[in-house]
Image (cartoon, rainbow, N blue to C red; front, side):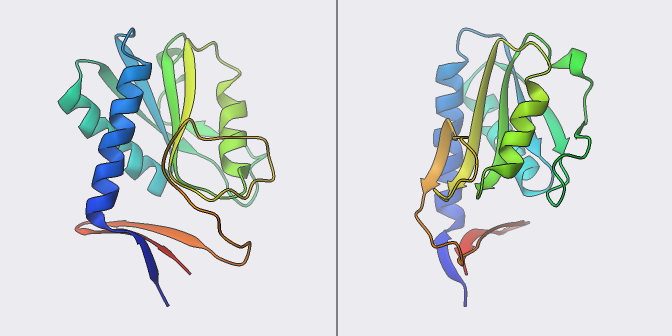
Length: 164
């Protein structure tokens, strides 16, 4: 059974709100890098990029971050070289913050490069963390049991998040 926790309209509203928060945080910068964790996190980063470009004159660079979610110690790959995000503001973005494993390994990867500002953003924060990582910007905070699972769907016009 799918228990819808975010509709397409709610996702759009939360995306816009996060874009405004990012703009406020990086207003003194000329450029911000949105580093989306592969698949849904990258799709969400792309949605934030579109909103940011409508509300600000920030140069927005999109970066896809590939993390092996089953073995996050594996090498992390980014779609742009380190030199392109070095000494810039960066936001690491994912769809759901579950245990914090993916986000903390992503954070660790970007700490190897000097950044001006570094923030994290998620659409849904589950409040179950194995690691001391938090989302600076979040669309929805939800307390769930460990047995429950949150899935975000971005398939064309089908956009929603559900709890199962």
